[in-house]
Length: 188
Image 1: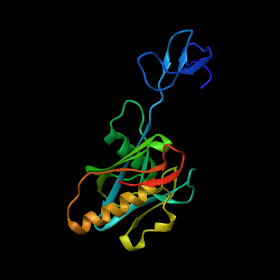
Image 2 (image 1 turned 30 degrees about the vertical axis):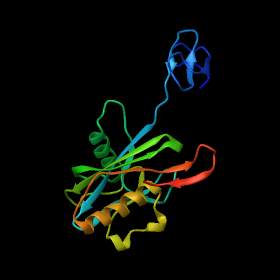
Image 3 (image 1 turned 90 degrees about the vertical axis):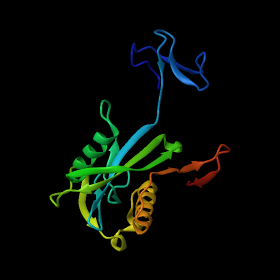
Image 4 (image 1 turned 180 degrees about the horizontal axis):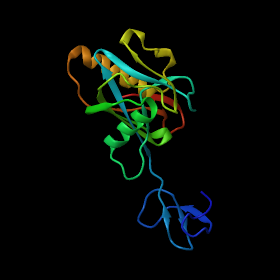
C-alpha cells in the first residue's frame, strides 16, 4: 500500500502506538489501515453417499476440482457466504447441516470455513466460475486433481468421519514456512 484510501496521501509503514505489528498509517489523516485475513466459506455438499465437486474455471488452479467455496463478502454471515458460493459455483440447492472444518492458512492470510450440507435436488450445474459440477463416490474422487490442500484434508476427514458415523468440527492449521523461513507442513 502506497497511498491512503481515505485522503490519497502517502502512507508509512510502522508500528502504531499501543500496537505490536507494523501497519500502513497515513500521517495526514491519522488513519491506520489494518489488513486482516480473508475468510473462505464453502460447503461439503452430500447427496446420499456422494460428494458434489466443481471443476475450477478460474485461477488459481484452473481445471482442478474443489468443493464450492469462495471469499466471504462484507455484510453476510458465514452461512450466507457458504450457500452463496455453492449457488455461484454449482447452482446447488443446499441445506446446511453443521459447521465441519476450520482451517487456518497463516502463510497466505486465509481461513477456510466449511459446512456439511445436504444437496436437496439434482438440479445443479456448473456456474460461471466452474467448468463442471459432478457428484463423486469416495473411490471416484480425482484425488490427484484437487485444487487445494484444504479440500483434500476436508474430504479425507469427511470420509473417515462417515465410516465412524460421527461428525465433529475439524480445526486445523496448514503452514508453509516456519519463523526461520524454512518450508514446513504442519497439520493439526
